[in-house]
Image (cartoon, rainbow, N blue to C red):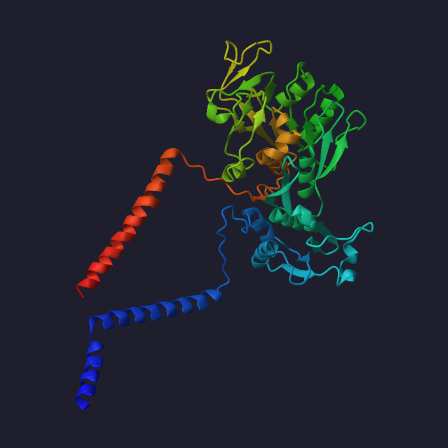
Length: 483
């Protein structure tokens, strides 16, 4: 009996010396060490106030323009979210957390409007009640309400089904902060009396979002462009200015005026408009631009997808990989003889394979003798800087040779078109902190692969990965067999 026990204890003792026990012990030790390291890392990381946005379109990241606005705040901003307790929108509160992390002047709290109606009653106007999920941004006595329906942009299918298209939280919040902290809000005057187009709804909504006030201006009845005009917009006139109107606009521009001229193709000449633009070194030629490079039009050589040059107006569009669609543009020619104080910068340009038809009676789009050769400017930015009365005075203009790119359908379907206009307007006002603060797309991009890519992926999944697993298993089996 004692002999049996001795053998048993001997076997147990020898088992601790076996290779299997050694490898098992090593594996257990390594596992314990890895678990300990993971626990320590989690404890350390939990103490670090740092977050990474891993979403494809950087949904939770703030733009440089927003950072500039937050860094320059000189007054406290209070953001109020109208939520039921426990039903806060995590996406929106996460973005607001980024604002708070950047600036100590930002505070955020939530109020349940049903439980505490007296706290939100002062924000309700004309008997209207605030919608749950809305945000209130206030500073001092000024406040702005952001409806929950304005925080997300929707598109509608043919069956009138709403689909979330983009997230506009940062755009709305930063715009509201600029509104409540602004000393005065820019006023944009829209010239009328010449058959001008009406500003599309999408564009007027965007003007409101970015705190522009719009007013109509008829220079036949007004003695001059009003003194509170921050900029003048001439949107697709069909008839010419009178000499008196031209002189009023000229006087406004010479006194550090800012203007956007969006011209459309006309069967008749507009000599007074032409005279005004020639004063600033350009002329919009009566022509029709044709794009010969298939990569720079949308299936129709008249529907241009122009190249964006290097300028603060278009650089954000390039970085966001937004394209523009310009149908039926005219050529903008920069004059050889112009004032030395002028700085003319192309914004949108066609390819070298483009041309502009000058014969409007032509029956073909093919290039003919006398046509204007590419590349062709279809939008330019102009700065006229002069030193007068012991100070530098600056006039700014943006001239675009097409108006259809801001039509209702294109303004909603091609975001780059609306963004280009808004960036231009902000550039005129030196409000570059607003440039490129745009909604974040919520659409999921499709993965398109060609036949060769499909074959490669199938080979990797069906052949290479199984072979790798089989080889690793065979290696482990052979090694253990010889232990």
